[in-house]
Length: 296
Image 1: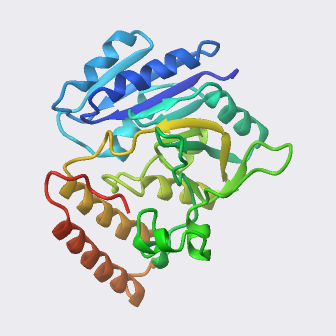
Image 2: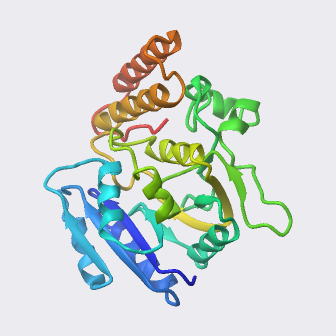
């Protein structure tokens, strides 16, 4: 990787994960200049202190309140200066060659603004990190819905969850609608053209929104499965389970009203709001306070 790399990590009560994440960056970016900004959203577990052992390359900004992912990510982008920006969750660990492979795809495709890796669970199974644009059907065939588990090979699932995609021979990536914000490499200049993340999103769907706005500006988004990271989902950034459920549904409606039913007079906007309210209420009833919220 020839270009300077800025790493931005939004931390919130990540426990032991942040230290592991930073160690993976340090271990696998030995041949590239990099800097990292950890934006801590008022963690109560002192997890941000893990970054102190990685100074001076890693700096910490502590917010007095949890400002949400989008706003904190924008703070991190503003606090760094690298030409390329790696957005990374603290519960992610880079695997060897991941950053280099992502950077290679950005250099291969001048119109590409964002590229994402193959995201793995700790057991090696693949997370659905490359996705199709959300629609009304997404709520029925989402990543964790019952219909997706019953009909994993159905057309709606294959359209929304692009885990089956593979680059053509000789290529390292394939174009998709959006990639997960758990790990994405972006061009700083492209982020600037759309004003970074939309801060109306407290948590969830800000990555889909960002990628869609970039594509509307003529950029492309790509998925590079040869680059790999491990993501221990729900290990960071989430508020309490019930707050996370509410945030997910609020963000889903914001996305739908912004990109799909753009007029307040469209009947589908009211229908989407009603369905999301019902789904949110059902999730809250089914989720005790000591269980993790479901990301949809």
